[in-house]
Amino acid sequence: MEKILILDFGSQYTQLVARKIREQKVYCEIFPCNVDFNKIKENIPKGIILSGGPSSVYEKNAPLCAKEIFDLNIPVLGICYGMQLMAHLLGGKVASSLKREYGNAVLTHSRLAPLFADLKKEIRVWMSHGDRIVTLPKGFDSAAKTNNSPIAVMENQERRFYGLQFHPEVAHTEQGTDILKNFIFKICHCAATWDMGSFIDFSVQEIKNQVKGGKVICALSGGVDSSVVSVLLHKAIGDQLTCIFVDNGLLRKGEAEKVVATFRDNFHIKLKHVAGSKQFLKLLKGVEDPEEKRKIIGKEFIHLFEQEAKKMGKVDFLAQGTLYPDVIESISFKGPSATIKSHHNVGGLPEKMHLKLIEPVRELFKDEVRLLGKELEMPPSILFRQPFPGPGLAIRILGEVTSPRLELLREADAIVLEEIKREKLYEKIWQSFAVLLPIKTVGVMGDQRTYENVIGIRAVNSNDGMTADWVQLPYELLGRISNRIINEVKGVNRVVYDISSKPPSTIEWE
Image (cartoon, rainbow, N blue to C red; front, side):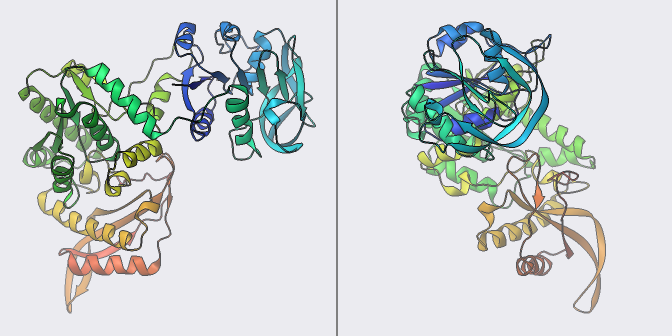
């Protein structure tokens, strides 16, 4: 499979470069800048991109890459710090600029430069640097300039080495995608052949080679990642896969039944349904602290999962829905002595159970996982399901979790989702849900005084869950939700709407 490698020097935009290249149907992977040179050679890349980064190349502990990459006879593109590092390693000189350049700048380029083929003579670009190239390495020419940077682009066409002082991957750079396309197609000569169909074919063969005759278990939650992993694995190895669905009794209305029906009945995947509602509720009795709730639920989940797995006899692999952002966070450059962070969808299971990990979607972003699921003919109800926390409704019930409080919240939450879907807003909103508050208020129903529960409604939009803003739902919709909950859910006499953003608030209430 043809691929472009990105060596990451700590830029906040590194993932964006990879996304832009994958959008052109060319496969791309991110490696830490200090990856072993032999690993680079083993991947046989069609081209290498050196990312930006916050350091200066002349600093004592500046991040470096193997200089041998310039002897591979393949194209190399340096972006910002990557350009300066290329100049530094190949004999040029980089120094601090008297005038820093941040934000928009007008770039004038040479039409003969391959990177700018078929582009406008002048383009607006996004700069973010305090250093500049003072002396070009031997064999290099300046191919573009701005008012502040006489060498805003450098090139050695003979060796196919190029450097950009600006960021082509960000939206602020005009025709930035075209510059990257010129690099991957006209300079690296890649073919636009990477798509979800080819990924499935490649992955199925890889899974077969890895698993062989072994047994695989997968913790199935009904969420997008574990669902797509389960269907992909089943396509590759059939009944060698067993999915374990631990029903903690903290799911939304009808959700457990939907998971069983979808995977056991529709996809015909071997599924063990572990009914653990009683155990979880017993352990949560009297517990109000949200962190304690999370720990209890996580620990019991592992216990039940492990217990069920042991009943199966010898198992060889644990499948997880690890995504590419998790992998990048684990491997990206943070200094040679940095401790690598591990990501486990099921905390602690690999260490406790001594299983080999299999992570079929570890090279994909979230939207690519959804495209994969679509290619596998999975229903939109799974692929576009809003994120749902592992501890479930336990952290949407403020205070003690009891069976009556769970039922009350389930009914209220079902109404919220029904009305959001009726307005065709479900797939446009990151998360929308109900919360049971730990207070009661006075109300009047049927000429009688009531003293009952309060339901909070939360609806937010976000790209990644790290930051979020509240959604301005139509007043008519809010009124309908409130009216239905108060009239249909016994024990509720007041509904409020949460208009807090993250930060300072979090998306979930606990």
